[in-house]
Structures are given as structure tokens and as C-alpha cells.
Length: 300
Ligand SMILES: Nc1nc(=O)c2c([nH]1)NC[C@@H]1CN(c3ccc(C(=O)N[C@@H](CCC(=O)O)C(=O)O)cc3)C=[N+]21
Image (cartoon, rainbow, N blue to C red; front, side, top):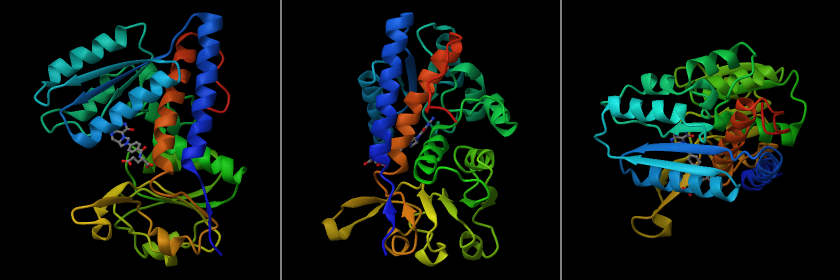
């Protein structure tokens, strides 16, 4: 038996269509164009590709994209001044500051300078607190994308055992909050968890977000479980030629695919959904800013 593949690329295309439809509605009925500002410090090639993809998909969905590429030596004061301008700009409904930031900048301070209403990454403490207390929040894009795929694949998750491996503020913690919201029994495990394999084997829903290539083997997966692999790790691929690399997840796909009931591939799983959810959050932010009904199927 081989697991069903949860096609993140296809899911993401559906989300982008919904986003584009709502953007047309906002434009036609209310004269609004949702706008997303992306701020990037430095010239890390992977970040540049990622920012370019976001900009392209933003425009394809009919929204406005504002890219701010600053030199890596930009000071914290300059960055905060830019954020203040974006907070005040009526055409900007969403602001994303690409992480990680250079070491001379206090990332927490920068994230908390973003207007929570424009915080499409959902990293501001106010949105973190709102999510944790079950209030309307901006929800981080990666866990939101995972939730949408889980809803699409499983529907009702009430009573399910969910294990999230990884406790980051960006994925692990908000993912656990969302699964609690779906009435799952949630365990957050991590690298120090005793008998990690044993804990993982309890999971009906296993979310791997540790950031270590192929760390979770198939014999940690409960037969029939739904596995969401958040990891995106580049490893050497000598079989493809000298110096070549390939992307792999945090799950050892080849051994897990024969055990799981369903699994997301890497690439083509969570990654594309993250960008689609960024677009969705921008539309949501635009609607909320204008006291308009929120798009259906695009929020937690
Ligand atoms: N403030 C902030 N918010 C972020 O959401 C954020 C960030 N900073 N910094 C960097 C990470 C990384 N990230 C990815 C999103 C999609 C893919 C993606 O679409 N990956 C493709 C593969 C792309 C390839 O082939 O390289 C896939 O998984 O299929 C990858 C990486 C968002 N991040």
C-alpha cells in the first residue's frame, strides 16, 4: 500500500483562484486593490527567488506588489522607518519582512513594529496572542496552509491525536493552536522529547517541522496516518551529477510513503501553500481594514 499524495501545488492553485476571484470582487464592487509589501535585506539567492515568486503570484492574482530590497547593512532605525511608512500607506494592506534578518537587527522588535492589521505573516505578539486565545487573528502562512490541506483531505479532525514535531514560533506553536481549534488532542514534540519515535507513532496527524533533513523515518509513522511534511532542506544529490542538490523534507519520504495513509511531498507540498496563504492573508487584511465580509475558505 502506498499513501495518497496530498498535492500542495494543486491545493495552492485552488486557493490562488479563490484569491483572484475575491480580488476581482473587491476591485469591481469597492474600487479596492489589495497590496502586499515585501521587505528583503541582503542578497541571499534563495531569499531572492522566494521574494520574486511572491511578487509574481501577487500580481497574477490581481493585487499590487511593492518590493523593498535593501542592502544588508541597512540599520535597524532605517528598517523601522520603512515599516512606519508602510504602516501609514493606504495602498499597503499586508507587510512581510523576509526572515532571517541580519544579526545586527533585533527581529522581534522589527516584527512588533508592523501594524498588527497588516501583519500577514502573523508573527506580531498581538496576533500570536489572539490565535492562542481563539480570537480573530492573522494566522502564519505555513501552518494555515497545512490546516487547509488537512481540512481538504480529512474534513473533521475532532478527537484525532495530532503530534507536531518542532516548537518554532513560525510553524510548530501556531500549528498546535490551529489543531487545538479543530478539536484534536495535540502534542508538541521536539528534539529533546524522550522516545520521540514512540510519541510520533501515536499520531493520526503527524506534522513534521523540525528543519532536519529526513529525520523522521517510516517506522515512526502510525499505519494510515496523515503526514504533513513542513521541512524544506537542500541536500547533496551526487546521483544527479557532481555538485547537484535536491530538496527533501523532514520526513524520510521513501520509507514513510508505504506506511502513511496520506503524505505531502517535498517539493510540491507545504511550500506552494505557504505562498498561496500569504496572498489569502493579504486579501483578508484588505477586507478587515475596510469592514467588508471576509473571503470564504481563505481563513482559519
Ligand atoms: N517573513 C517570512 N515569511 C515566510 O513565510 C518565509 C520567510 N520569511 N523566510 C523564508 C521562508 C521560506 N519560505 C518558503 C515558502 C515557499 C517555498 C516553496 O514554495 N517551495 C517549493 C520549492 C521551491 C524550490 O524549488 O526551491 C516547494 O516546496 O515546492 C519555500 C520556502 C517562506 N518563508
